[in-house]
Image 1 (cartoon, rainbow over the protein chains, first blue to last red):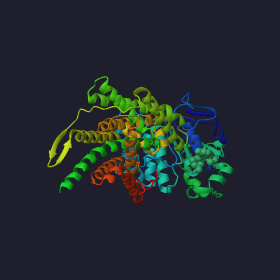
Image 2 (image 1 turned 90 degrees about the horizontal axis):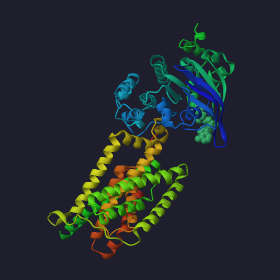
Image 3 (image 1 turned 90 degrees about the vertical axis):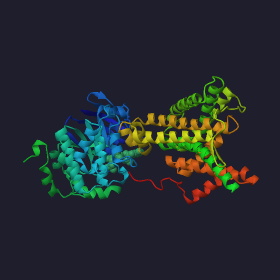
Image 4 (image 1 turned 180 degrees about the vertical axis):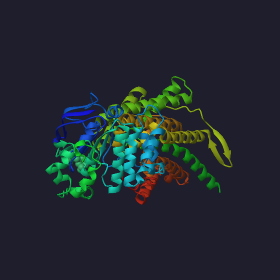
Length: 270
Length: 298
Ligand SMILES: Nc1ncnc2c1ncn2[C@@H]1O[C@H](COP(=O)(O)OP(=O)(O)OP(=O)(O)O)[C@@H](O)[C@H]1O
Ligand SMILES: [Mg+2]
């Protein structure tokens, strides 16, 4: 559905991504794992047309989009839930949702709002509240809800777990899984929380300092020595400002078993 | 007692003037909120559209309402052109460069208008003369009534537009978070352009209505109107649209009360007093009367 070939991106003279090639098949959840500064956000912004690649091609359903304007990319069906939610803070919850439907030709958004409320009932009670006054978890729900109103066919999620309590993260991931399974939504999930991400994805790429280091099914990655050390908690990674979140995402390997129950790659079921 | 009536009368005139400063401020705040640019070309853009109204009135013999509409349309188009060809190519430049760009635009418009209409002050005929009604010693002129009604309708209509229409909400969304706006498929460039058009058009209404109350129209007549609009915007917090209205009304009323003080030099220096008072208010409330004291997180 989405294919990147040999994509290079730099911020001025500083290269951020080198020779990225990846594919997201229709109907799958693909995880993009990587530590702080690996380039996950850069990659997602490039797909959405916020950044321009210096080299390489990006195609969505056969059409080249690496030079397309962001609004064209959104109307083609690629919608992003950006890192840090990026809500319209002074706009109400309802107005934020309405903006999700900005490009919708039909003006009847009520059905889409109802769908969002069915996933996140708490938003229904807060329609007139300013988005900036929501709790962190509610903000992330609204950010996802806002993107859903755009009726995406490919949803890009940039660290939805950022700064949230484990129970809420769990709940959000259940919703993502449900959107994929029941609505057939294709998802690219950029995350540091490798455990949960591998638990709901069909395939994963690991990004390290701007390069794709590894890729494979969740089962393959779990068995990989380096991944275990870096992401699955046998070694503590603490890098600059997000250690709080990293701490939440790292759990001992013993927990892998319980996540495996949810794993959907065939070779991983016992 | 005599004096009280006098002050009241000047306060009424002040409200009318203040409405026009408020409109000027509204236009500038709208442009600032969505594009982070303080439009120092607002005076010259307004002057240009007021000259268009002048030509419509005197050469084409249009009625006043028609001339007003002509000025609004001219201003809207000028606003679109300025955004598209002067500011957008420089949009990644630092804000200070963009301010200089608006000053450059002001000079260009000034030169063009000078070439077309000349450098003298031209009389601006105004159909609404005389008073509408009086209460006691207070007279309400037709001009004051028109000003207040126009300002009220325009600002309420504009607020409703921002509150209830999709494009209006998108304007507010763009003002708050451009990245998110783009990710929702909003064409941010087009929204900026629209804001410049609307901001210029609102200024044009103020310009056309205020001109008859000053001596007439010339190339520089709008500068003091813009400065008061600017001051009104600052007083209101510069990011608050209702603040712009409150600021404009305050400046209009205070300025006129200074005229009412029966001491010659006070009247002469009224603009100085107005600005001194603004400085005083800002020392007490640095973010303006209705400005945000801090940015809320996302
Ligand atoms: N606007 C920018 N200008 C210059 N360099 C940037 C910019 N944004 C990101 N970078 C650099 O690009 C690299 C990749 O950053 P990016 O934000 O894509 O990483 P990330 O994987 O999303 O990290 P995190 O998990 O912390 O969000 C980093 O080295 C970062 O410093
Ligand atoms: Mg990131």
